[in-house]
Length: 100
Image 1 (spheres, rainbow, N blue to C red):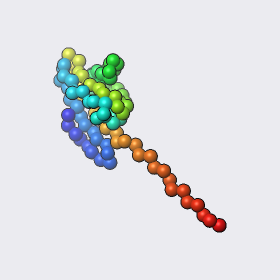
Image 2: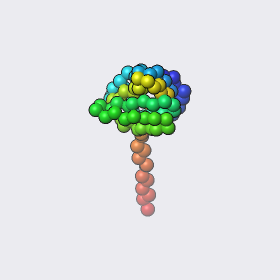
Image 3: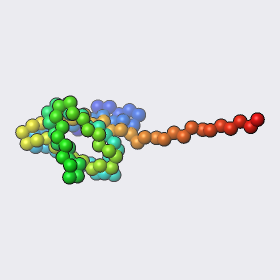
Image 4: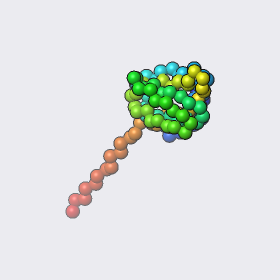
């Protein structure tokens, strides 16, 4: 994995997998929302019992708290862009009252 951008809480990385390779599991407590976009090749994203096949130009949103593994097929390689999305901040506007 090669980090290509880190700004304002967003982290973008390129993941390159050779045939048969897979990423280490990302545990649920370590994962904010992230987007996986297939730049080249094909990969399988394993989310518990669910396997999602990603081909070139496919994308998937990994929800906060979902542990997952990204795997290249036995005869294919993959290059994936991963964008880690920072936690959303809820901003409560200040309410002003005017005594009059």
